[in-house]
Structure formats: structure tokens, C-alpha cells
Length: 183
Image (cartoon, rainbow, N blue to C red; front, side, top):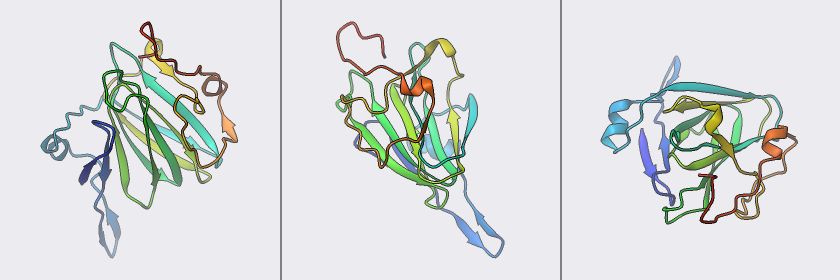
């Protein structure tokens, strides 16, 4: 594993190093010790898999609020996605900035997303599958989101969504103010 920082504090890319031989390949997709050596503490509470039938399916931008914000490790295990992280941590120097990365089955890259950041993606191929490792249990009462096309973020998505849930399409814009309950 090669773990690299991004411009957003605590948001990391994880580049897997496949071992190839005549049988195929092998990748270590999670290693507590390697992550700890890189300064990452990540205890897995649950794993989730998102199957997306159509190219142009958009999910997000989701996050879990206080007092149980969640970290995620995201990989694409089939197909391809354009993955987006938005920093919603008011104390962060990159507050309201975003980061994107194309994750594919073939490029062996994952994202380690810190708590307080919203996450979403749009599929670039039919039948794309996304795997999430979560450090907190899902809590419906703390499940929050912001709109994928919020002008406060100006995310440059590679395409418009063709498939999006009513919930994701109806999230409000994110407005930063002293009384914000979004984070």
C-alpha cells in the first residue's frame, strides 16, 4: 500500500500494489498495521456495497453528523466512478473545498475519507460496484447530505446524472453561518 496525502487535510489516497502471477493478481485492500504506521487509526464497524446498474448514477453527497461522524475507505470493485469529497469541517483550512478522483477496478486506488467530509460519486460505467469500509455504525438520525450541484462548492462533475434518488436530488444547498446545523 502506498498512502498519499491530498490537499484536504486527513483525506488520503491509498494506492494498492498488486502482486501478479500466472493465476491472476492479489491485492491487500486493508491492513491495520500499514495504516497505523502511516498515522491512520481505522477500526471497521461495518462494510457496505453499492451496486449501480447504469452509467450516470449519482449517489451523494452524504455524511454522518455529530456525535458519531464517520470515516470511510472507498474502493471501486467493478466498473468506474468519479468520486468526490467535500470538506465540511469549519475548522479546516480547506473548508468547503472538494477533491475528486476516478476510482476503477483497474487503477487500484482507494480513498480514505475523514469524518466531517461529505462523499458522493457518479458512475462512469454500467454495473459499477463500490465498497465502503466504515468506522462508525450507520445512524439514520445523524445521516445528512448536501446537494450534488450546490453552487457553494462548484464541483466539476464529468457529466450530469441520469439516475439520482429523490433524497439526493432534494438535499439543500450548504450555507455556512454561525448557527449551521449541517455539521
